[in-house]
Length: 255
Image (tube, rainbow, N blue to C red):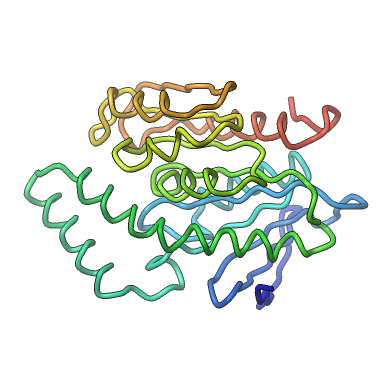
């Protein structure tokens, strides 16, 4: 049994936002302000490196899923991010990343190593959060669950989905294959994958190698021109439609 505690609540733009902790790990749960009767699907999201659970990318995606599909959406602060203190290891890795960036050296090896360390801590936390959230009557133990995370959210999400049979579908993208490819081979649920063709950090070959590693019979590759941080916003709408197809009834799939 995991300890779920709600610590704050507010409502705006058709969503109810509830801050919570699970075993001391801070998170946020967004839900419809006027929910339909019964339970609704849950989407767990992972935020990017250097960001936090309520980053505009997270709240914006949540609004699309909550208002467009009637889903619940939850995000945890990753270790060393948001409301969580940094360890000495966190500080050392971040300092090394900034040093490499200032020197014009490749960032990938440092990011891959550090994200793998964070994922080893975060995956058990996401599994505990899922256990706790499924005890809520508005979510329930048997409803479909999706995952959506890019960048560091993929670094955490791939091992999480590989270990978690309750996940029905997942959206990933924009990460190196080095550590993740072996875990991706264990994933068979439908996957949508985002890749920037002109990414200055992740080569096309590396991005394609991670996509190719997924064992899913249904997997879609979405490639757009542009650099790492230039992923088009319309890809968020595509991800919502993808998750709706696999988590919702046909009548609730957004156009």
